[in-house]
Image (cartoon, rainbow, N blue to C red):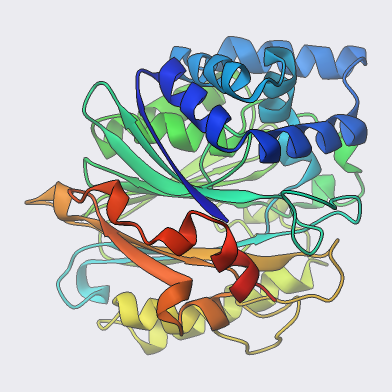
Length: 387
């Protein structure tokens, strides 16, 4: 993985991203185009609807990224509209607030799980998995967003902003998609895109409202969950093709694998990994109730019970086309001084990366992004700690 710092208006920031990771963007988009194609009527319809629903900032990021990388704007747009249909994430996410944490303030963990593709070879890939980047996005309105994304994407998989609220997302393994191929999934609103657009808001409630407004117009690209949290509130939005629901937690814990809790009637009962990670996650959270802090969440993130392959929270797989955990992030949220909120990112397998100083870093939102260690910029960290 690499770290990219981009700042200015959204088109300028996109241009800087495009210039800095042009090779990775070209590889990701080219292989994606080969996988999905771009001439079908259905593909064109989905991309058109995606563009209509996107905020101005997302379009400008895409245009800038196109100029910087040399990849055509239409190809960048297709990649962002349809990428989650081809590579849906696994993931396990924890949150705690109020009496569940020592100081009452909310804390959020996401283990990012994703599958690879045997066709992903050459520059910009490692063990058949696409290039990921840690992105620091500074915009003209004074906001800063730090998180994990994919080269070529204008979205975030997980992140934290200057206003002291965090976001993460999960794929939802529902019965309605269990028999569909990736090319047959048909939603429009991408979670990672909505996540970044939410983090551009100045308050967590505005982010939630923006996301719910989008879901009234079009369903998620694939079924799943979007999390938003500040120091005193955790919001979890579950969405499928024709339904969505909202959970608001002000005291206690919330755990998700790829199973819905509110829309549980949609869950695929045969999704064994989701069941195992959900049950194990709830066990860990309840055993540490009242003491859930960064140290505890690191232990959760590295947990191998029922594994260490598909059914554990920290997942490994010898098959590049099966899901494995490729990164993790813990977000500690402050209310009186939101700019003191912190994000810790581990690149590679959490069981290795959290145990070594070179495998993870912690960034406080009022710091200078240039303080992020050099080894995260040149891509060696991910290769060193992913297994």
